[in-house]
Length: 105
Image: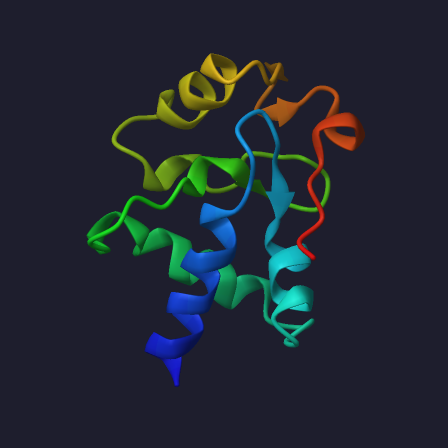
């Protein structure tokens, strides 16, 4: 089941448009497991091992904080990737979070 859930997380994450972010909870809710936001995070921590690219940098917590940044190559990778897509980040938080938030549907 875990692998199947992880694959579903990766599939949804690949749909996040460039220049947008979503939250762990939004993905969990979309997948019918509203209380599994933490498990979405665990899946994304393993996304670099997946054969297809997963833009895990586009997933933040419900307040727009970059809580997953420690799981990238270095402390600034997530910030650099988001900023390269036009997303402003200050103090490890997406500045215009509501404007760039993408709701999985």
